[in-house]
Image (cartoon, rainbow, N blue to C red; front, side):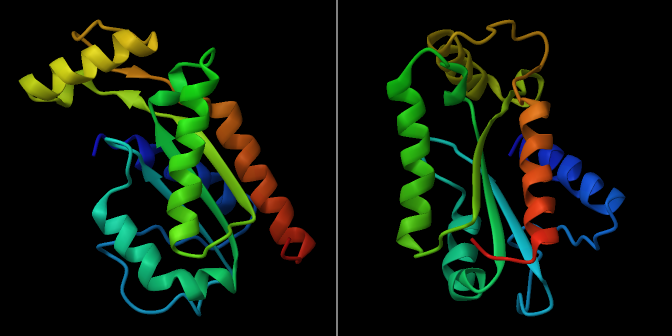
Length: 173
């Protein structure tokens, strides 16, 4: 929606390419075919209103059996993670991801939740107001004159390093 998931995926893809891996990045709508040609898969999605986009939910449901046969990782992008001092909110964010994966009977070897971004300059009036309210409650910035990024890039690099290590080990956990 706001391109933060894409930005994170780009960072992951660049590191994988640098390490010599072939990478294909596609949205659920772009992907057609089978996962058979892939040795491993990373899936990422943003949480909006406590759920993932419909296209992602459909895609994972359609490919869950194939995903279970691969080395896989999943990352979730959300703003709830801003409330670092609120264990209830963090637990709720983890539960959203766990429930999504459980519904599809998919257990990725690596799961991570990243902070997203407030793209105030891209929002319409009502979305801007709603996101400002959410940000204020979460302790994020309410300066609507610019965008604010909350992604922990060190965390993204650690996630990617763990995935690369899993590929090198050649084992599924």
